[in-house]
Amino acid sequence: MSVTITDYLRYGWQMLNGYRANIERRISSERQQNIAGYLDSRYPLTVLDLGSGHLRPQYLLLKAAGHRVYGVDFANRPQWKMKNGAYIVARALYKWKLDLPIRAIDQTLVCGDVSNLPFPNNAFELITSVAAFEHFLNCADDL
Image (cartoon, rainbow, N blue to C red):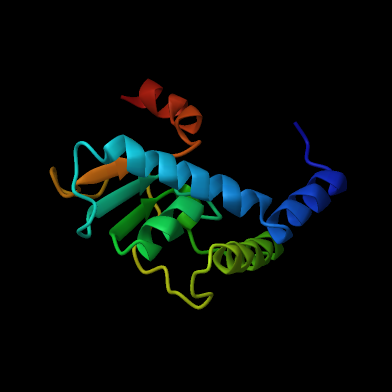
């Protein structure tokens, strides 16, 4: 599947008009409802976001809710390419549309493999992942 300029333009428009941010808010709200019976989310949780991705919208929403969030993804590898510049702009748009501080520092992002996590057992009260499990299928072959 190749991405065309039309795809980028459509995606850019969805970022600007808030369509993408609204989807992420809905997903965050559904997660909150799903965990309500198990965890008291009135207090900050230590959360692991598996496959946080280049844009990190759920990571950002969880941090904005006051949780201590760690994001694990190979996409968290620092890169200085033109494509990374586009992601920096897109993340700023997400933060703007999600009413988050644009200059918020993402200090708890880890470049890593979800099948070999660099954390001790029981380090997190909640582990979440949105639209990423299909990317983990190759990891199962390595186990």
